[in-house]
View 1 (cartoon, rainbow, N blue to C red):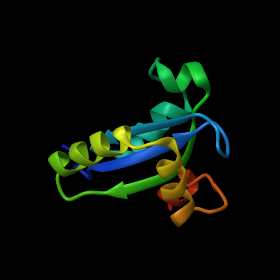
View 2 (cartoon, rainbow, N blue to C red):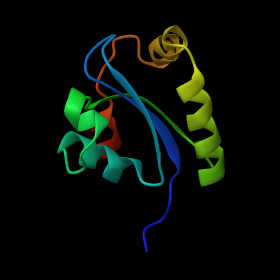
View 3 (cartoon, rainbow, N blue to C red):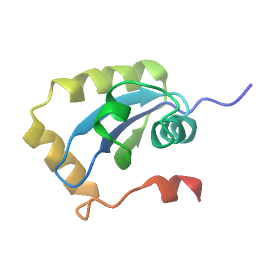
View 4 (cartoon, rainbow, N blue to C red):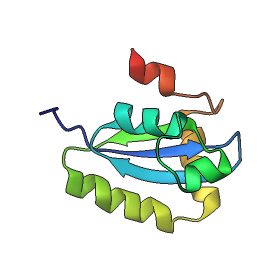
Length: 98
């Protein structure tokens, strides 16, 4: 069984574009699924594939709590959060792969 690494992440269609906030226990696998459209839904429908923000958590419960918090945030707050750590809106996917 794979080791769990809970994380909250934000995907974007482009800079200041459509945003998607998600939670997962395996960030690499989940982002791969989004990028290759292996799961239907919002990210596939709106072309939201660029990883612009993520934060690891110690437990899945903590990650889920944070995801719910971020989903309630105003859009401007989410944009400020992304730009606080990724001002260029660089796709962070290559960083995950090492």
